[in-house]
View 1 (tube, rainbow, N blue to C red):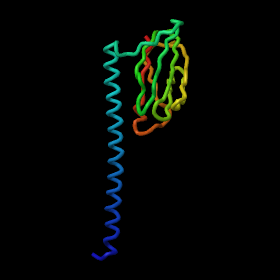
View 2 (cartoon, one colour):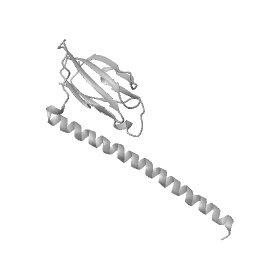
View 3 (cartoon, rainbow, N blue to C red):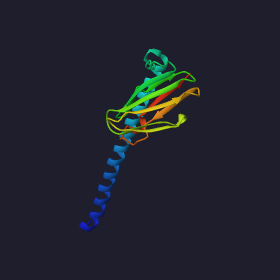
View 4 (cartoon, rainbow, N blue to C red):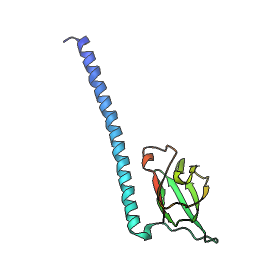
Length: 154
């Protein structure tokens, strides 16, 4: 085989190696996000079974308003589960301590951007029973798809 015949074969082999490396990277990232989702579900299951771990609202002078401070950072919300009663007025104080994030609780029409050092406050009425997922609505890196929390309305 001459040199001209080897060059296309070498180019194909190099291309396959590059594709395998890139594909492997994305598969590893997907597994990493999936394991984060599994960990978040484990935490939610634990919190659902042990009510002391679910965040209670901060007392306010007006007892009708339930206040929660939610912090966003790469790639999680803290707390990631909050619980209120049907009809409660809810006040959220949203802050980011690590990068630009968002807070989207679509069931209640909430879609906010959260920048570090710029707290955002949101008010709504929990007028529907159920579990409602909130998520980050600003792409923030490889853990973004798993950046979620849950509002439980009883």
